[in-house]
Image 1 (spheres, rainbow, N blue to C red):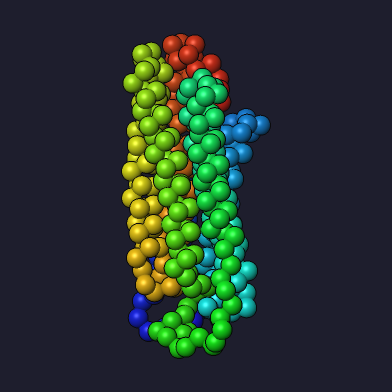
Image 2 (cartoon, rainbow, N blue to C red; image 1 turned 90 degrees about the vertical axis):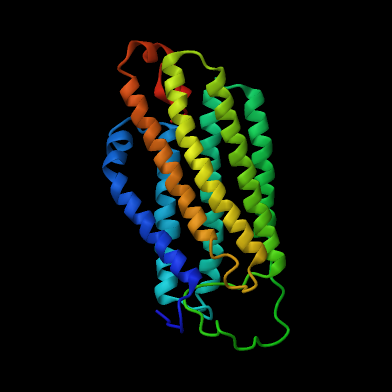
Length: 283
């Protein structure tokens, strides 16, 4: 690992994010095996859960740790690693969005009007993400001058103010989509009268509210960091924590809903309402 004077906040946050991600994985592995691997696997729920869980592991954690301990800002490997990280970030956010979309669509008994609105907003989010990913920094006209980050540890790139604005807009689209999902879930809870189904959606709302609160705070902090930080190396320092936190929250939400489905499936009332867990919850 390349060392510099002082503590690099961007690298430190990346390491902390990876450690917490692995720690959460270890805490929930037994539940994952019981609720997903030992259950029927020919479902979209299983595919989405595994994709969210393990793309985060192999696509973010391992490359991030390698970049921190074996890379530097001037390493020839870093450009490819940075591009890969950005693509994986977009993929994880896309998977998380699809899971939330399927969840709301199922709660509304597959109402196509709800699906159409969610897809429309998702398309806008994808367009913003593609807009951010398509930006190419202009080639420097002169050799960069030495700065405090001249021997910058880890694979970290400079984010120009133009690029920062694009990524702030992309994360803002994610924030809008999360807000819409939360409002749809809240509306469904208010309109449902059946006790069994209401209990199920109440738990989903609790988890959804927690997800929305945590991700809103993380997204707002991430967006503000992109827009106000002057150091080009630190503008994206909350991108990795926000992305990995989203993956953790989505995994927790799916585990909690699957656990509740297994508990409620033994009752007559919920059995008549929910029919198959994969139908009404999407999980």
